[in-house]
Length: 192
Image 1 (tube, one colour):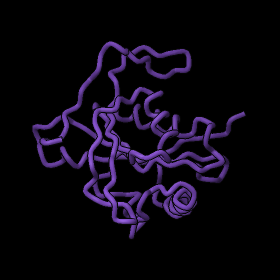
Image 2 (cartoon, helix red, strand yellow):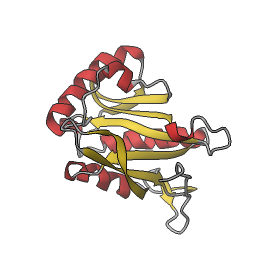
Image 3 (cartoon, one colour):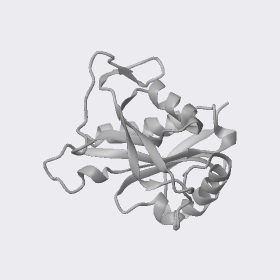
């Protein structure tokens, strides 16, 4: 029996989210650079929505949808939001926690007519997350160098993803059915 629940994150959840984030950082180095202000990092000014996954009273996962910074200042740009701050407790991995969090973000974006993007550090430690994204319909569009560096001062490569177009039908699990023949490209910032 799965007692996982996904709900909107509220301010009172942030302390538990930061505690979980610290555990994930110690184990996985995510985020690669520990934020100076974890509260602000989990709730950037451009946040549109955030969710947590709970098992009982324990927070076991987190995800945010925020305005995509590259499109925020251009009113003629497509309506794009970015999925970020996705992390899951080690004990909750391989139990569809991240998949369910992504599903909630994807549903919310569809209801708000937003295209979604995400980025992930291009590193061997990201292999499981990359496999998850690609298995759940995200399409790798390009790899770029981040404007920031690793804790050791080295350049960081980021893989950028968008979603494949979906059709309105649902599969047996209730998830949208992917139309593999249609790719909905999302504009990228000039020069990338």
